[in-house]
Image (tube, rainbow, N blue to C red; front, top):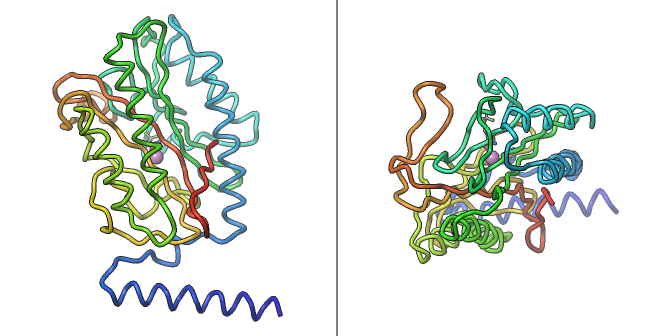
Length: 278
Ligand code: MF3
Ligand code: CO
């Protein structure tokens, strides 16, 4: 009875995917649709990832170096039986990305980089637990931050929330991009084009690419079992960015204006969306 049930469910899914493909939509490959067992593994990884961010939130303060944040993240992650995903990933030298003010993403922690009152910083944490990957980031405001920068941080958080709210089974990736882009641009900001969200779970970065700009009804079909990040990088000025040629990692805004980013890992369910990194 149970076997028959699951077989016919699978046939229903295949049938539905064929229908959408015939209608001209891009549909996810089988690899992008996680099994219940894989989802449980990613969920456990995400629980550790969230605990790391909560721990950072408790400790972060003016006068602390980003090198100290890196050690806190490494020690906490390892003591929970997990491994920081950034460490040695494609040569990345540290356990966490820390990006301050006009740094957009992929900032490298350093003992010589000390947080100052008025800074805004993105701490991007990614965790491997029992082979399963999760990924999330938050902004932190150090002491008193000028109101225009605080607003950038808050609107960027709203962009992530609107992106998540736009995601649903049998919707499209473009629904997410449009929700983010319209809110950012209505507030006078721009959306970074050169970096996107991504599938995550069995590897750090999987397909699909999740763009933070787009058009409703366009892009890949969203199907229950898909797990991916939404991680809009929103600039106060123009969307152009460049990579620091000294370290080949840190991404900065071309115009030197500040940038903010928030990230969650989400699961498309049968009825909606679950944020795994809460
Ligand atoms: N956490 C980043 C992301 O959201 C990945 C950074 S790659 C690293 O995709 F090597 F810099 F960690
Ligand atoms: Co990510």
